[in-house]
Structure formats: structure tokens, C-alpha cells
Image 1: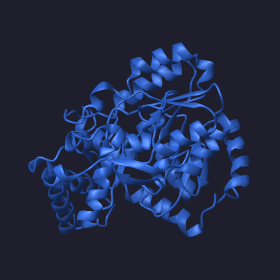
Image 2 (image 1 turned 90 degrees about the vertical axis):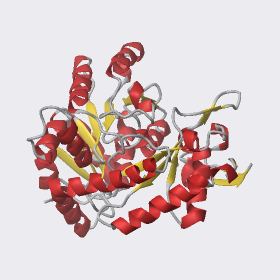
Image 3 (image 1 turned 120 degrees about the horizontal axis):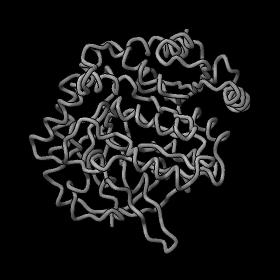
Image 4 (image 1 turned 135 degrees about the horizontal axis):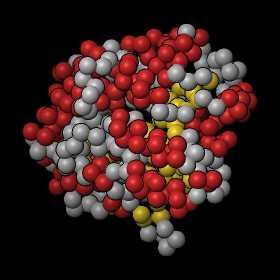
Length: 378
């Protein structure tokens, strides 16, 4: 049933279960990655980037320009900059780019959707140069709903039909099922290439388990299949997207700066506008994360210089385009009163922002440092 559910939506020939999304990424990039290789994406998620870089390859982002401006409202701020992508392919050489990716929705870019037109145009560029297109499909259903409600020609199509068209342009998929499969654990790799699938299965046996279960219990495989069916229910998706927008509307009304319009799974606070006096090297996003937890026990995550910042050869930090704080909303968990409480804590924290200080590391790991880093006030 697991394979049947995935194949119905994606049309992929070869489906490989994994215990979560980063395991799928680890297997894929262990095979196709390596020194001298490049992997373009609209915006890589943190574990995707880490698995690419761990292989020795380079992860490159090509988010369209409007997606870098939190205050500007636009329908598809997660889109790939297709023109820059093509120039990059010409510059690096198609032989050095094993695959291109699109992440839907664009998590690190504010949970913003990607249009069908953009997916189609990206596929055309990839096809022109013989480069496979993989989709990071963690939030494919939310992306399909945004296409239905925002893109011309799709209002009368079901989320399933839209998802099927999205995946018709893909040569492969990675997915963490903890997102739009509505489950606690799980993920998968799927692809059309039999040779690559065989290589992935062989590595899966070494790291995850037998290809029939990929490190998952039978119960979890069944839950993924059920979740993939339920997530495409239009009533559920309307409730889901509206719940997130409700929080966003309350924060905007109070003057709290967020990425606009609200994305599919989370509200993203714009830390640069929230704390303009704190420079990126003192991690304004992380300062907000700490303040929200102290003020009201609200857990959030920084998506900015802690997560994506790098040091140049001189030791100076290179910051990402945006400094964000993600307030991800669990699916089918919170009531309206929960959301109201979150908004109250955020608004109160915003009112006290002048008391907040920047932070500095007391410990950072060499990779994915944001998972285990420790800080102290500056």
C-alpha cells in the first residue's frame, strides 16, 4: 500500500522507503555527490545542504529576487530564478551537475510556494542540458493548494491532479514524510532511473534496512500511505493554510514584521526588521528564539546566520540574504485558542524588543551547528 499510494501521486517507477527525509538525502548524495559536483536548488533545506556538502560537493541556491524581500507580497516567492540557473549550468558545465532540485514549498525561503509555470520552466532548462530534476516534496500538498488558489488555470483541478502534474516534470523525489504525509516518522526516495534506484537500494541495505521497509515498522509504512491520501483532501488543506494565515494576520495587525504573504506551514518572523539594531553576526533570529521561549514557552527555530552563515578565509561571517525565525504549526493539533496564545507571546516579545541583546557562540558543531549550538548574551 505504501508504494501504491506514492505511485498514484507521483508516477515514479522505483520507490525506496527510508526512516526520514535526511536518510533519503544521505543515500542519494552519497551516490551522485562528490568533489567538483554542484547541486542547484531554489533554496536547499538545511539537511539537504549538509548532505551535499558532506559528500564534498557544493549546494547552490537560486531563489528568485522577490523571494529575498520579506515585506513584498507576491504569490510565488519560492520560485527558482531560471535565468540564473541556466547561466550557472553553462558556467559549471552540465557534466558537473548530477541533478537539479526544487524544494516545495520553499522551507528555508519562508515556506513560500513554487508555481507550476516555474516548475515547468525549470524542467525545460534541465531537459535542455540533460540534467535530471529532483523535487524535495516535503510539502507538496500545500504547494498544490497554493497553485490551485493562486495560479491561473488550476482553480477547477483537485489537489491530487495538481500534484500529479507537478511530479510529471520530476525525474526523482526525496521526501520527509513527517510533513505532508502527516506522520511521526518516515520518508522515501523515488525515481524513474533503474540504475540509480539499484545503487540507492544497495546503500539502503547498508544504512537503513531491507528495501521493503527502509528502517520503518509496518505500522509506519501504513500510516504514510494513509497520510498521503488524507493530506490531499481539499477541506483539510483549506483549514491548514487558513490556520497559518490566521496567525500571520494577527501579527501583521500588531505591527510584527513577518514574511508576507504567510507560507503554508509556518509564520516566519523577519528578524532584521524585528531587531534592526542587532547585526547578523550577533544572531538576531536566535535572540528572538530565546526570548519567545522565556516569555511563553514557545518553541521556534532560527533560519538565518546560525543555520546558514559561513566564515570566509579571513574568519569574517558571510550571512544569508534573510534572518528569519520560523513558527512552524503542527498539523491537526492546535485549536484557535492555541494560536491566539502564540500570537500574544510573539506580540508581547515584540513590544519588549529594545531589551533584547545579541548572542555569541559558546559551542558550535562543524556541521548543522544550529541543532546543538550553545550561546551567551553579548
